[in-house]
Length: 368
Image (cartoon, rainbow, N blue to C red; front, side, top):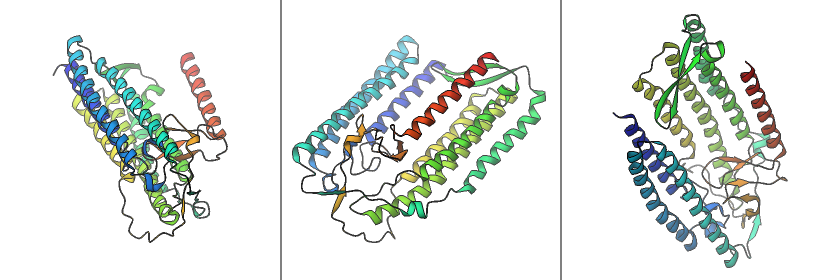
């Protein structure tokens, strides 16, 4: 099949998937129930007519935009014989979704302020102190699969290295399809994907450690039940992330084997990349699927609602900026999981260290 046609089909599929994701994000199943479109509202207002109206407006405009951009991408891509059009269309769709989201965010903010949704309500903050005295432990057994795959990769690479040709071919994704980049055979090029496995393993362990210390998502109106739910989801997320790391290492092992053997089979490459990637996506999403609340018990009636903290959130509820909050990770308002506190000093220091190390690595590679 023509390479451009394949890329057009891939890009159109990506556009449709992006549209489906953007369409689903405002759902309470994919974003916190009490922060529609990134706006904190009292629990009793989470299904208010204004919220439903903004969801309908957002989706009513997003659907035709996705359809038009997909059709234009296919048409222009075929006329110009370029698959790059699909990438541009995907960026445009992201921009359209962002504009529609901000429009809904601003509309709900006005409705909340003009309707006095927080008037005569007692606001409060609930914390689960047991996460410090009895924290969810790092599931070290779930690190073992990643380490085993890493050990197999390093051992196989050690045996293959003396027999490698002078040039290695590394598959890369480009707008025109999969291309192979020629690399001179050195220790660093031959073991580049093995080193990437090490980086993935360390990153996942570090991410899990940070997530286990993230600020808990506890509802002030039902603190006991929400804390129990959060603890269960936290343990599940930790295991899921480490499992995803193992799957990524399996994918890198397969790519290393193809590079060492010089195999350029498109079908094999699709299996090596596609199967672990699909399983990794499923593993990452699983902890956030609707979970049964059986066994949580009845919660006490606190008479409180979670504090309206919209002033700390920027860009439609997607960015958290609070220099007075010691937490590095906080629960997301848009989507599921956690996001960083962009004003936290430890986060800023970590970013500075990463930038310095990256710059140093770039200099070493350039001089080498």
